[in-house]
Structures are given as C-alpha cells and as structure tokens.
Length: 562
Ligand SMILES: Cc1cc2nc3c(=O)[nH]c(=O)nc-3n(C[C@H](O)[C@H](O)[C@H](O)COP(=O)(O)OP(=O)(O)OC[C@H]3O[C@@H](n4cnc5c(N)ncnc54)[C@H](O)[C@@H]3O)c2cc1C
Image 1 (cartoon, rainbow, N blue to C red):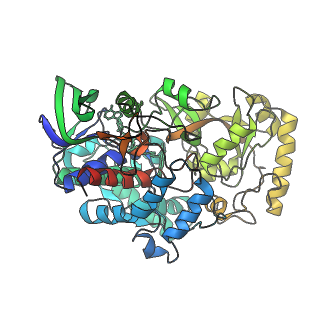
Image 2: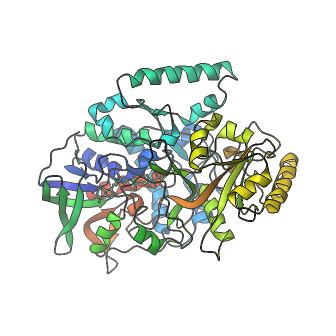
Image 3: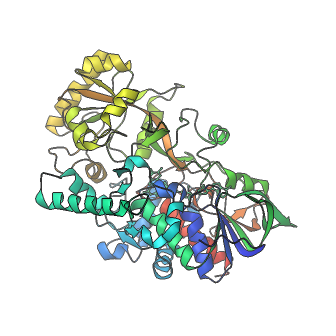
C-alpha cells in the first residue's frame, strides 16, 4: 500500500468503503493524483461485512443471464416501488449511466462482477420487476494478491464465517446444507475445508474471499495497481476553502495536523451515520433501536463536513436501510449485533411474535419491510418486544441468528442468555415473558396453514422473493413448516439497520448542493453520505452497493471533466 503523504493532490477521497474506493480508483484511472483517507485501521467499511450484492439493472452483465431487462422496465419498477419525486432525477441517472459504470469498472479495475441468474427483486409482482440479472456479486478473490495489505482489509463478520475465518460463497451454501447427504456436496465441502486449513498455515484467515469482502479486496487491489496513496487511521479536522470553493482538508494524522490541498475536489464517502447516536435520534424514527449491524467507523463525519460547507440533508422518508437484528456476546467477550437478513427468518419453521404471542408481519418480506412491519405493528408504543422463534428441527437445519446450522455455537449462546430454549411452547412463552395462550393459538394457526401451504394471516410464501428466501426443497409452502419438534427456541429481535439513507443533497454527478441550491465547487458525496436514491424503499438485493459503485464512478468522472 502506498502510504506516502504529499501536500497536493487532484482528488482527496474520505472513506475506504465501496463508494470511496470506486471513486478513488476511477479518479486514478483518469490520470488524477488521488489520496484516499480512512479513519479506522482497516480498509473496507461496512462493504467488507456485506453480502457484496450490487443491483444495477440492464448492465452488459445482466444481458449474460437475462434477455428481458431493459432501461424502460427498470424505470417502471422503480417508479412503482420508489416513485416519490425526491431523488427521481438521480434515480433515472443511476439507471441510465449504471451500465456504463459497470462496463468501465470491468475494463479498468479488478472489480469483476458476475450476474445472478435467479434472484428476484423484492417486489416481484410490481410492474417491471425482474427475477434475473439485475443483481451481481463479486467473483471470489485470492487475498494473497494483496500481499501484506491483506491484514489491512476489514474482516467479515465472524458469524458469516466457519472455523474462525473461512468465508462461504453463496453458491456453496447449498453444499454445506447437504453435507453428508450427497456425495458431490460432501466432496465440495471437504475440498473447501482442506484448502482453508492449508491457507491458515500461512495466513491469519482464509484467503479465498467472497461476498462483500471480495468486493472490498478487489477495490483495494485496484488501488494498489494504480498506486493510489492511502492514509489509514486519519481523519479530517476541517475542510479548506478558497472563497466558496473547497480546496483541501486539514488532516488529523498519527504525526499531527497536516494541510493537504485538492486541486479538483474532495469526495465524502464516510458511510453515513449508523454509529452516531445524536444523528440517529435526529433522523431516525423514535421506535428504531440503537443497534446497527454496520462497521464501527461510520459516525456521520461526511454529513457533518458537508453541512459545515452549507450542504443539506433532506428527509427521504425512512432514512435507513432496515433489518431486524439481535444482540449477543461472542466467545471472546465482544458485544455484537446479528442482522437477520436471509439466513433464518424466512425459512420454514420460523415465526416472529410480539409479547402477546401473536405474529405481526410477514416474516418472508425483505428485511427492510419486515422492520416496517415492526414499526407499523407497534406504532403507538415506545418500545418494541419481538422474538424470532423456531423448533429444534429448523434450528438444526438453518441456524437461528448467531447460532449456525447444525447447532454450532448453541451451547455458548444458551449460556449467555442470547437464546432461550424450552421443552414446550408454554414454557418458552413464560421464559421470554410472552402470553402462553396467545402463543399456543398462534402456533396452531401457523401449523394448520403450513400443512395447507397458505398463510392465511400474512401471505407468506405468496411471491417469488418469499419462495427464494425459503427452502425450495420444502413443500407445499417453501416458507412454512409446522413448529412441532421440541425443544423450541427464541431470540429477541430489534428494529436495526444495515446503513443509513439520509445523506447530503447532491447533483446527479455527486456535487454537494449548497445553501442557494447551487453546487458547492470542489465538494462531492457518494455512497451513504449521499442522500439515498430509493426514497425510503428497498427495491432489491444490492440497492445500496449498486448506487455506491455507480455514483462513485460518476463523481470521479465529473471531477475528471468527463
Ligand atoms: C451484514 C450486511 C450485509 C449487507 N449486504 C449488502 C448487500 O449485499 N448489498 C448492498 O447493496 N448492501 C448491503 N449492505 C449495506 C452496505 O454494506 C452499505 O450500505 C455499504 O457498504 C455502504 O458503502 P459506503 O461506501 O457508503 O460505506 P462503507 O463501506 O461503510 O465505508 C465507509 C468508510 O468510511 C470510513 N470513515 C468514516 N468516517 C471517516 C472519516 N471521517 N474520514 C475517513 N474515513 C472515514 C469508515 O471507517 C468506512 O471504512 C449490507 C450491510 C450489512 C451490515
């Protein structure tokens, strides 16, 4: 990693997540002298924790697996599901220029994405929805290519790895589920595991990176190849101005304050404000919990710097990308938050209940909509008590939050009280403070509906997205199976987030808009520092990283004068 710090650059980028690294990579590819500043000791931000899914409709990659994705269809879809006036111009621009950004990154960086042949948009019945090609994920990456900088890459959440550092690709999950039941699956798992233990002889974790960690690693490798200067453990004390133009930053480095000039622009890409309690209070609904599954560095610095220059943060409705989360303590004693995105909630044999023992929303909806369901169900109450419950068969097959399938980690999580277990539903209800009769009645209806295959309460399993997050091997409804195998288990869940959506108001090219509605010369924002373009909705997998890549690209291109 080039860690030399000069006093003059063309571009200074703050924040080494998907948005900032894309902007830095494109700026460098355009021949601009670029400095990337990162507050923490690690490259990657929340991007490193993420699933790495990038939603960019109609790219040349989509065309490889889907013949019917068009700009018009994607436009109708977003109009139907995110169609408010706020952000409409940037949404349209995202669709229009997104394919170009993906093609550019493919040709000029190590960011190699592959389209998923089947992954439904989150509202598959809406006009223009697609089940194929819009979402891409990074190809697996060999971390040895990073050399010593591998240690500087933020590791994934341990809950999404095995054996203390083995990442599992989405496509391999099915093999892990079938291990010892099918010969090819068992051989594949054996091969991956053997390779992992060999990698561990020389590295601090597995070197086969997938998901968001592969995306962050691919971006870092691209920066290495273009010799972009990177300063870790460095923050910006203030922006520098010449008249109304931003001309650089005053950096707080390990060696003291440094004044660094930016001839063309400063880009804010610090990942929003998920870890700033004051900003959470100001921008998020009162019912939102304080618990975020994001990486610790994002504390609203970019938004505050933008506001100090006259930028504004418009209300866009939801202001966060919601996900139900649970709280636990790892074996090493560190407190952690588990995002219940796709691993358990929508699978057969799981149900979410309130303190009356009643279901309150469709557990198979997207994580974002599930939390909206929590808000709606508890609209007039200051605190929300909800539990995710399942029976022992489902726990074994799919895991429950931080407890992995095959009951991995169960003993520890029972000991700490993260998971509650009971031999009967009555006992479970009384242990977690839920109305026992309510729970018994709810489970009776759920079990009856599961056998009939129709969720009479919330329509679980009624669309392609529900079915996708369920279990395709389970019939008649891939999302429902009677809870009937004791012991029963419960984990308390909270309305948490995967990131914040309220960000700085910008032009289509990422220029921060100032007090008089005019762009502030030399100041840009992208990623979660830019006001989200989906205005409170979550249309599909990858709708934060897709725009992070596209607006990172557009911002750098604008600075380069292209
Ligand atoms: C478990 C999980 C799974 C997810 N999966 C997906 C997915 O598959 N697809 C998707 O689209 N979204 C996903 N998300 C959301 C997505 O990861 C984030 O929205 C995205 O990573 C934000 O990118 P970013 O570049 O804006 O910020 P980040 O990736 O968070 O990067 C911001 C960086 O800025 C640094 N920083 C903060 N302050 C400063 C400062 N003052 N100076 C310098 N640096 C600073 C931070 O330390 C951090 O490194 C997921 C989130 C989680 C938690």
